[in-house]
Length: 362
Ligand code: SF4
Ligand code: SF4
Image 1 (cartoon, protein in one colour):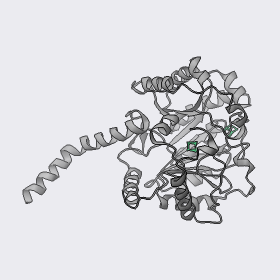
Image 2 (cartoon, helix red, strand yellow; image 1 turned 30 degrees about the vertical axis):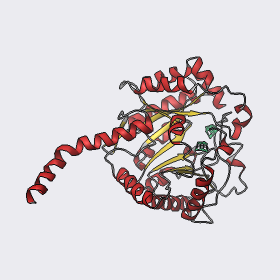
Image 3 (tube, helix red, strand yellow; image 1 turned 90 degrees about the vertical axis):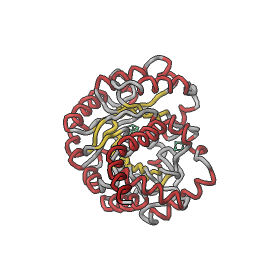
Image 4 (cartoon, rainbow, N blue to C red; image 1 turned 30 degrees about the horizontal axis):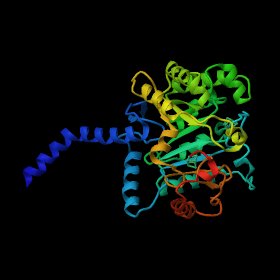
């Protein structure tokens, strides 16, 4: 018996690495379509900003939550997207916030104390990835304090920004413990990008913001939208090459959604040739000299709609939505505890299978 214990002790030391590698590789390949380490956060390997780093305490937290909640057949929100402000300096014609969430009846913005309460409640429910969105999140002067408040043993955080204010904020964000900054870039030429964002000089700000983040040690991603036109005319592939040139860690690929300002344009879009899209994504994900590419539509194709199943969105007014692209409200965090809202939302979610009626994206 004693010999067995001793042998197990040494077996753990020799074999734990390969055991962890196969579990890691299986999940990363399934979820991300690659197994590349894109960077490091607090000494732990990062595969994507949408996943907790390998070998980290937040990963331990995620696995424990998963095991406990799954035994009770409960869904839990591993990812929370939270809008920290309703203002933005850009005027993009694909904005899902303007023309949708900003029309909410209550215009009572969340305060720093509200954000702290939401973070506490979401961590209790099992959130391990917190994404800050807007409006333009860097316009909220409390953002570093909100990030700092997150217990880094439980969750990691990322910011989605248009990049305009990034250069001046990067140092503060790093100090607060942020893992990654995802900067929007839609075209590889300044004129087209600036026209799309509705403000001159955005492209230049994005580039200088990314450089500053890299200087202070933040992981960076280009967050880009893909259309059939961009696939066909090579713009999408050029963006991947630009990301490589800029040495960002990841490219986050989102498709245009039938929501907000884009609703009136959506019906005119040609459907994306997914086969071609995934061929391109796979091609560069196989290459170690390119950033990791996270393609949202593939995750949706593999796992279905995550809204209300393992993800939800909080608007800057405290309203809980199934996701950033659905305008339906399931409660307000200032009036009802998150646990109760989530329970109701996830029960409804089981009934509908997907919230496709409101986002039209499936
Ligand atoms: S930068 Fe983002 S929040 Fe601002 S208008 Fe564009 S899409 Fe909307
Ligand atoms: S409702 Fe649509 S956009 Fe939202 S998570 Fe589901 S599939 Fe994605």
